[in-house]
Length: 120
Image 1 (cartoon, rainbow, N blue to C red):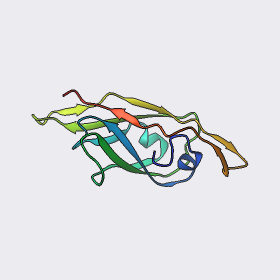
Image 2 (tube, one colour; image 1 turned 45 degrees about the vertical axis):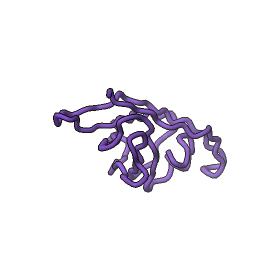
Image 3 (cartoon, rainbow, N blue to C red; image 1 turned 120 degrees about the vertical axis):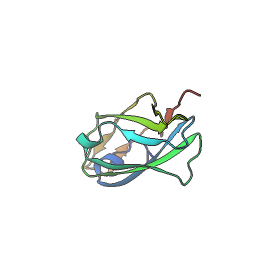
Image 4 (cartoon, rainbow, N blue to C red; image 1 turned 90 degrees about the vertical axis):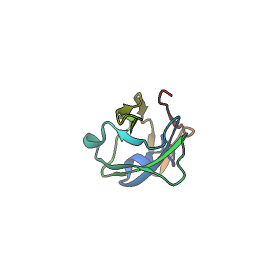
């Protein structure tokens, strides 16, 4: 996520969130968060601005807080040359953040980027 995968402020406050998926053959791909409906995540959308074959920028709307320890599953879907559906392998992301003093002090880890690829 642009503000850090383990940043409590990303996952505890509703609003628009953005991130980057790094991989191969991402042009024309659509990001998917498998658990979106269950977790109050809406409008998962690929963003063309800044995206390329190796980088897919995306955004979504978080409607409710997501608790630490929650596992998200990211994947990218796209159409192949023969109009067949191609789906990347799943990339799990477990949210691990610490809250202290309410939501004001957060322990974070370095930003990790999701890496996906499609067979060439």
